[in-house]
Image 1 (cartoon, rainbow, N blue to C red):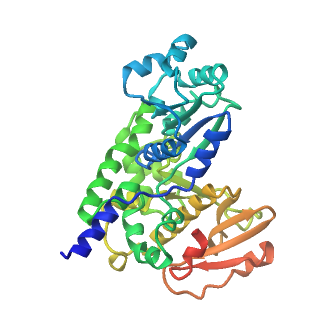
Image 2: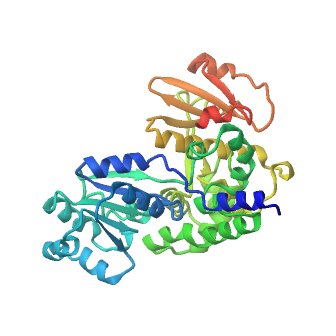
Image 3: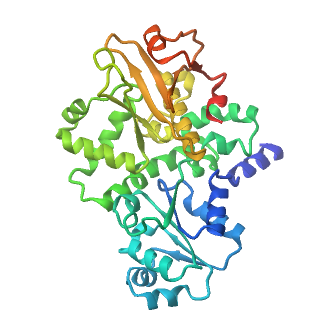
Length: 390
């Protein structure tokens, strides 16, 4: 290995990724009098981002590790005198993984109301969000941000368009968790993905609820991984898993709230001709999807490249809409006769239709769509995808 190649590998492995919401976090903590909450899947970089924000602000900061009992006891006490003694002399209170602290919501409310000059930043996983410990207590007092695996738009801060396209296959196969991006070598990336897919992504669910069949959740994810880009039947999933419909729907809800998967519902203004009560599921991170089915092959060696490309593009578009604060309703569209559009966005009173193709295609807009919903139509391919997600 040459010195230049070795140097490149070292630089890649320690790259600090600029997250798009960083400036918003800094601004809110500096200028707003609200508790700032940062949600997202485990391993998405919440702690790293928070420390970058703290460094940029320069405030005297108390950094609380929510695993330590001395902090848990005080921050769940509802005792203002104890809370005040904990934060005395500090400008900013940072609590990492706040979901581990009982009664955290009401105690944050006390701090916010009684110490208006104190800045508060809290990270939390989805169990923090789902448990209801925060939402009710901090109504009108909080600003909420979500951090997902790294987006291509965030990588575009560091890499030019040529470099982004050069990395495309790696992002599709291995995904975009920060640790994956900063890990050198396919074997090491696979080892990391195996680790988080077998532990971290289930912790939120298992911490939040007593799950009767925890292994069924992994089986459910595997079934969904094989069905990306296809309509999902809840009844069929239940039959294959040996679970009733209510249990399957509950598990799907928990997986969505844990930022593992997201749902794309069917679009219809004509239920006689168009499917209206169906959904597709996609993974926020294609690396997690691929490791679940033990398929880390290159795109040229796969038989699911089209579906995988569709998942990648829709997930990246979802990140783009979230981080740029675009209020858009997203769907797929299909008629009972089989005519289909992969992805539809409803923006105000206009509809925009997209076909997502991994290869070259001359697909035309379906007449049954254009006559009713308009002619805004585009094919998203490996040639033009960056315009769609950047």
